[in-house]
Length: 293
Ligand SMILES: *[C@@H]1O[C@H](CO)[C@@H](O)[C@H](O)[C@H]1NC(C)=O
Ligand SMILES: *[C@@H]1O[C@H](CO)[C@@H](O)[C@H](O)[C@H]1NC(C)=O
Ligand SMILES: *[C@@H]1O[C@H](CO)[C@@H](O)[C@H](O)[C@H]1NC(C)=O
Ligand SMILES: *[C@@H]1O[C@H](CO)[C@@H](O)[C@H](O)[C@H]1NC(C)=O
Ligand SMILES: *[C@@H]1O[C@H](CO)[C@@H](O)[C@H](O)[C@H]1NC(C)=O
Ligand SMILES: *[C@@H]1O[C@H](CO)[C@@H](O)[C@H](O)[C@H]1NC(C)=O
Ligand SMILES: *[C@@H]1O[C@H](CO)[C@@H](O)[C@H](O)[C@H]1NC(C)=O
Ligand SMILES: *[C@@H]1O[C@H](CO)[C@@H](O)[C@H](O)[C@H]1NC(C)=O
Ligand SMILES: *[C@@H]1O[C@H](CO)[C@@H](O)[C@H](O)[C@H]1NC(C)=O
View 1 (cartoon, rainbow, N blue to C red):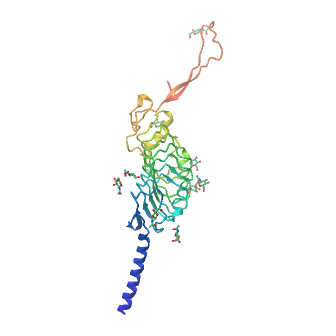
View 2: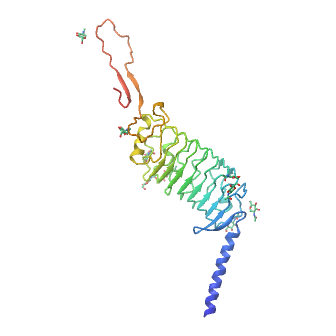
């Protein structure tokens, strides 16, 4: 009896060893190990110019940071049999061009870190097949704008970091109609204005970082500012850049009025004034925020 039990035990031990051998030996220049219950590869500083084609397809968590990759081609990961990856880190890979199909086929991708690269733009469909995305980190790149629909229809999306880019505006449609995001970092960009309805479809947002931008604190920003204050989203010191009078002043200061210059609508003197009449009434109509006196 005892020998049978130990035989079974030995057999399963060999099976486990065999499996371990299998995936961790397909590791090329990386260091493979179990990490937080996942088969992980640390491929940092490995001088890869392209994603290697001989890593185990059982890897779920791969860190390719600090490799001079420069670009990600179409199906870069899927074509290398890495379709089942959950977590992908690509920090400091000198990335400039990211093909719109680079992440195609990665239907289980949960976390993607593209920080510290030189990415200039991302195609609206670049995350199309990554419906499970929860975390997207794009800090420290050179993004000037974001395409409409880039983060739309991502029902698991929670965290999006876009800090330290060159964004000068963000279209209302970037995050789509049913946005589940809880944290967005937009600090240290070139943002001047935001639409008053921008946060309309963000039902779960709890953190929005806006400092280090070029905010033009006029009446057009007032609605957005009011919403961020009422939802308690302003947690870091966010100041105005324009107009000069408000430069350096904090949004949160309730005394600040985000005003627009009054505009004179009338009179516009269509006809000559009859100066022979002793009394002449001129109606004056002026529009502005706040209402001019
Ligand atoms: C990668 O290389 C850089 C520069 O040589 C070094 O500072 C860094 O600690 C290295 N990182 C790892 C994970 O080996
Ligand atoms: C794995 O692929 C890389 C890059 O494609 C290559 O440099 C390396 O020699 C390959 N390793 C093995 C063990 O085949
Ligand atoms: C970024 O990656 C390069 C290799 O491509 C490396 O030499 C450099 O030290 C890395 N920078 C940091 C901050 O790790
Ligand atoms: C991808 O993985 C499958 C299943 O493990 C294997 O049959 C196939 O040869 C692998 N393809 C490449 C390109 O490594
Ligand atoms: C999001 O999904 C809706 C409904 O399924 C669809 O009509 C819309 O085109 C999708 N938007 C994007 C940007 O993919
Ligand atoms: C919010 O969602 C509604 C309904 O889907 C849509 O009509 C509206 O344009 C969205 N608002 C913004 C600011 O995207
Ligand atoms: C948004 O979510 C609601 C409820 O979950 C759903 O009925 C609606 O179709 C969704 N709209 C889009 C555009 O995906
Ligand atoms: C913003 O809030 C201030 C003070 O609570 C209020 O006077 C103003 O009408 C609001 N403006 C908009 C556009 O919501
Ligand atoms: C002009 O205005 C003055 C002062 O309101 C008034 O006394 C006078 O009758 C007016 N003259 C005419 C011609 O309407």
